Amino acid sequence: MVSRRRFLAGSIGALALASTNACGGVGAKSNGGGNKVGGGVLSTQGFGKPDDVGQARIDAFKSAYPKVELRLNEGDFDPQQFLSAVSSGNAPDLVYLDRDLVGSYAAQGVIQPLDDRIASAGIDTGTYRKAALDEVTIGGKIYGVPEFYSTRNILVNGKALDEAGLALSDLSTTDWDKLHTTAVKLYKAGGRKISRIGFDPKLPEFLPLWAKANGADLVNPDGSPNLDDARIVEALTYALSLIDEQGGWSRFKAFRDTWDLFGSGNQFVKDQAGAFPWEGWYINVLVQASPKVDLRSILFTDRHGKPISFENGSAWCLPKGAGNPEAAVNWMKVMTSTDTWLRAGAARQATVEKNKTMFTGLWTANTDADVKVKAKYVKGGQTGFQQAVEHYYASTEYAFAVTGSKAGSEIKSAWQEAVNRALSGQQKPGAAMKQAQAEASKAFEAAK
Image 1: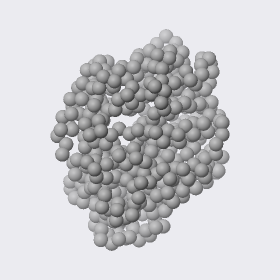
Image 2: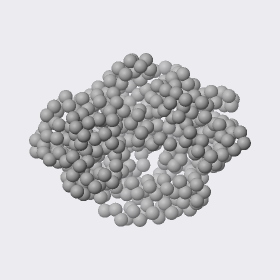
Image 3: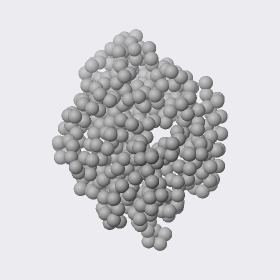
Image 4: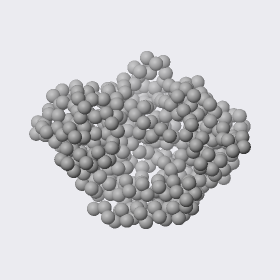
């Protein structure tokens, strides 16, 4: 299965950059510029290679701060590499990582609180979506500046739906019994050989969404784990039952792993998938790889019919020992400002016109930027792709995040490993989540 990081790098484009001046990042301590406001060296870790959106934002920073020498690495975030760099005194000036990791690194003291620097730089935190800002706020202090904002809705193979004589409403996640029936109707297999997954609940990654649909959060408001909540166990049991009805985990996963997710022979083109919840950036992949596919979409809802969505994304953080914090915070400000996102939108629009495709949206943690980019570049309409884009913009307004925690990384590992144990049949869902709760609680208590 292709990793989420690769997905993001290939579609959103924001993950960023090739070395614009020289390879840098971890092990390339800036050694200077820390007291030279507007100049010096700026090194990073965690950015990938730039696409049109990423490059436009890099160019915006270079235009604003031409005296800063950028040393930007090409690799994705590597936890061990980062921690080693910090402990050895060779920290990069910036680190780019998933927001759900911020709490654990803050507790370890390897990233710095940003409140004073944000204030000095004149960054208006009110421009950031609350859910994203909450993810990087630990113990009342802000440890990161949020960037992208990825939400989930359900993408549907219209051809499969019509063939089964079903309507989009049959895929509603409000009525779990009905969804179960729908998944079975969309599922296809000859003997033990699967030819189409009817509905993929996307485990283990989307457990937070199924739990929320059943009224529970994986992390309590104080950051402590809530993994053995009966409602979470019930949600996991239900999602597992969807997989069990479609061949069981081993065959289900083996078949899913054959999908050509980014290619012109993807799972919708080959009629290998009925429906699944997914992040919005995947529309951009589909519109380029298979623009004629009959794509449809529906909002994910809780069991009372209320639309819900699970969001996550990236953040810029300041490592302990960063040599040029002034330039680092200026980078955070420029890269996430409305003006910069508009430049990125213009770059994407140019790509769209060149490739004769459609603008499928940019979803960021900056509400103002999203509104302006959408108004300028997103064309409404009734096609399946256009409706899907509208659905993802809608879900940015109500999406939730897993609560930030000083043991966020450890809690995530605990519940993901628990789901994997349940998927493999090693443990029943209740036992798996009970073990996860014990492991996560221990980590939470140990965190400073």
